[in-house]
Amino acid sequence: LFEKIGFNINEGDKIALIAPNGTGKTSLMRILAGKDKSDSGGKIMFLKDIKIAFLEQEYDFDPEKAVRQIEEWIVELKPSLIVGESLGAVQAIRIKGIPHLLVSPSLNAPLYLGYLSFLALFPGMTWLLDRIYRPKEGDRQKLHFTYEVLKKYCSHRRVALRNSTRQGSKDYFYAFFGTKDHYRRTGVVSVRTWKKYFGDSYEVYDGTHFMEEEPVLTRLVPKILNILCINK
Image (cartoon, rainbow, N blue to C red; front, side, top):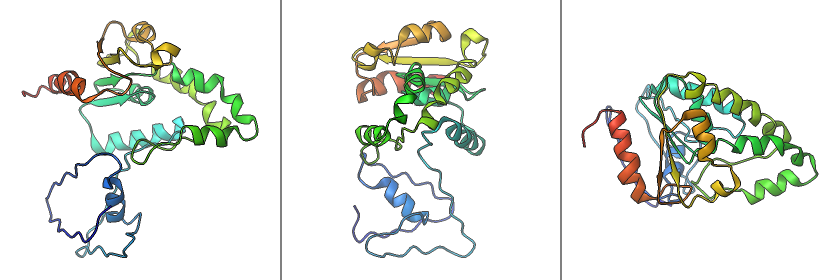
């Protein structure tokens, strides 16, 4: 991924590493944090008393473990806004006291995972599902479809939706749905379900399940700036 690179980071520096998925951003960060080693045996030198902290970009597929991980991140980062996508929107909704922006919220996905969890009891099914839904490098966290994990998702959804507008939550919620989202055909992503719990606080963009660049720039980013009261 990288060859013959070298750089210095000084106290107070804030550095952004920007590149497409799969080009080695996370690998470099893990090497700097000491979690991985470089193939060439390169060395990283730190000044005395310097400590490295590494904030993982992924949370566990087990919803109970994920809740604890995200709560720790919230305490550490103190965000002013939380953005959730797809199944991750359910995790985001559980966070209270912060405005929520949600892209293609898969509010019914936990029902599918929970009700069909018995399938993971059949020999070889966990291996097959893990293989089918194996993520690409840098795409998302690994999914491990065990019965013990999947059966937790129904209760996970119930807890999340207690923090909904219709249940009296004072948090701000707003969602985006794509016109070509194939998950809407199965009900995994459902505008009707969203309206049941959150009312009419949503809009529909011309795109797929994973928001493309054009709606990100013309819809999502302006909404973020508006919520944070930041002028363009």
